[in-house]
Image 1 (cartoon, rainbow, N blue to C red):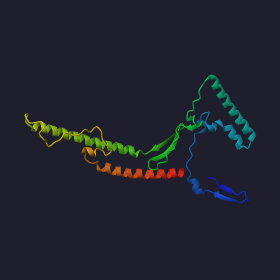
Image 2: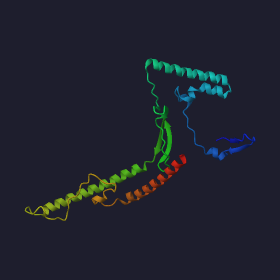
Image 3: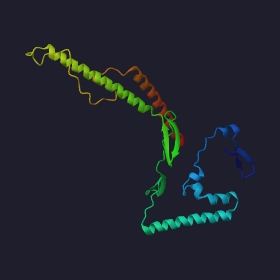
Image 4: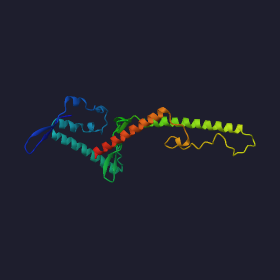
Length: 232
């Protein structure tokens, strides 16, 4: 949120590349930090406080000394762990033996979904995303709708078998046709919500929301593809 200048070394000209207005500065994201007194000993602001103070005062000699003290303490701690056979287990990072690099355990590299993602925040060092869970609510509603249809279908079939038994005489052939047929198995449902099993169509609300969800899904895929292209 500060001014950025371009200095042309060939002719010595200076050009303003970026100079944010007061309106731009007001729109910047709010910064949330952990209070200094609540930080642990190894959090950066507390750990490097003496080095930072020396730099702010322009005392490079003091800053170098304080930096050396910190690094020497880290070397001694590593030496003690090796001698005692203690394994160092980072809380928030993992080591990739293939690339010999450290990676944040909870990194989220997927494109931001403006239709489902509300906010991203860090709690105890763990990055988390607050979501709307539209698809979850739709799935629950759809499952309830299908279960109700299955219940009605089974009840209808049961009543039909009862009528079939009471209407036929005892010596009636078992092959005699009836106005009711034995229902097919309903243990496994296809993605079409049982339409191949003869169930009635989804309720109006469920069908409307399903169509709306398809439109949202299509828009999200388009946005994700654009984000991936921009990233490349």
